[in-house]
Length: 168
Image (cartoon, rainbow, N blue to C red; front, top):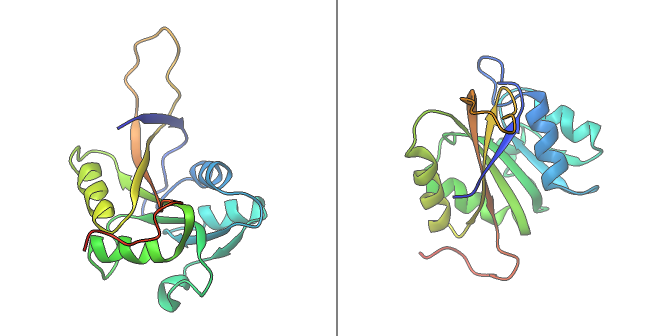
């Protein structure tokens, strides 16, 4: 799995991400006028969506099935509420435009969890795109530094060329 390091602050207690993480996700994974579905805890992604002038289905999206229009980006904490991982990813796949992304925020620490999440996503018809680790400070060139990693972010995508679903 290719890994990218993003130097962003850790989220506050009981929140999914920091504001800086929300800003990076929105700016790196969407274009103006793209729709973003926010399934996170806290206002950080909503603030980033508003600042970047994107459109969004925020927290009530959970209750109403995310609306009739597919999104370019779905951001969610882990584990999903009230559904199996495969069911969650199947719903994400249905709710994405071709080429759209799901960003799954995982607390750092369990080395097998990212693999388990990717397997569940693949079974639902999503493809692995990128693994981002969020660390409190950037690595310095030429220095051996222990990164203070606080969040793993898995970026999954709905293939732009495969109109079918998962493998059953």
